Amino acid sequence: MKKIGLFLILCLCGGTAFAVQNAELAFLQRMGLEKAETARQDRSFAASLAREAGAWAAAHPQDPQAKTALLMAADNYMRAQEEGRALVALYQVHFFFPSQNDTALLSSNVEKAMDEFNRKQKAQALKLLAVPGEGATRQQRHAQLLQVLVKSNLQKITEPVTELFEAYFSAYPQDSANDKMTLLYGDWLRQNGNYYAALLQYRKVSELFPNTPYQAASLRMAADVYAGDLKQYEVAVALYNRVLKEYPTSNERGVVYKHLAVMEENRKDYAAALAYYEKAIADLGAQPAAYEAWRGKADVLAKTKDYQAAYDTLLNTAEEFSADEDKYVSSLTAAAELAERRLKALPLQSAALEKIRLNYPKTHQAPEILYTLGYSYEKQGKTAVAAQTYKQLIINYPTDRYADRAQSRLGRLEK
Image (cartoon, rainbow, N blue to C red; front, top):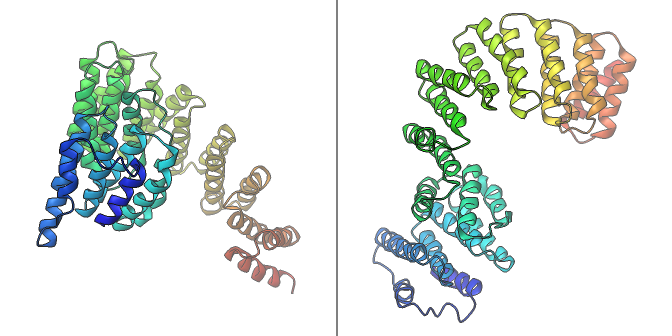
């Protein structure tokens, strides 16, 4: 592994560049050639080398050899079997020192790191290297790197990303975007289960950034933690109501109504939940968040056994989000299932599925939808239409498992 790491640094930094001019880096390079007596000791030794190299890069961000230091850190973290830290070091190289010439070798080492601890996320890890470092300044690239890592959902990077956040705030304590970055830090802590630390960041924005445009958002996000993670509903309701009262024109109102609806639905107060969903739909309009409110309304109607209203709501949801294939198809398949199982109305089932066939004929769910549609027509006694639908499935998707089922049904119809 040590030979591979040296080759990586030589290639990325140039054959002569790795003959580092800085005495400390040259020392770390020489020490990296040594090996401890046991595997455990060697991992510990490699981790120490990696931390030293990373610290040098952080202390000399403008020095051209900071790139070399980060690559040394990545190599030694791999040797120490701390692949998550190695990944973050490689991403720092990509974002802080962007170069198309580095992509192939960085990709190779990201793959090696992912092979060690999570092959399922390899594709996601490689996608991060396809994100261009767009910031004009190092600070902007640092912020972009944090945004990308928070959205990545990669495992085993919690500690190094947390340290990157801390380094950001230490380096840029007075930056005008720190309110937004603090909220992002809160999101990171929350998604890693550190709920009270997330609350600290959200409340910090609401109380220490008096001129921030994210006042309402920070209160709402804190309420979300109390409601969804800590199950402290009274505290959550108080914060949600503060948003509604103190920020009556905020874009957060619709989201607050939606989250209040979810809380009431979970507490089985369906009348209150329905009222809040209606308010959320009215406030959110065509925003993506409105979709969840529409689906929540349909769920509540179904739970209260108003199945026809639930079916109609799902159809309306599909129409509202007809430009979004996933939302459109999901809403109509849910409507079709409700029509079959609860309303016992096969014509309503086929009507919903026909809308999908008409508007998104090539959806990835097309084989299943065609089979279900054909079977619905068959049960309605519309054998000719059923046979035609089965044939369409067999012709368009001959290798799909639903094609085999359709062929079997068609054989029975043609006897």
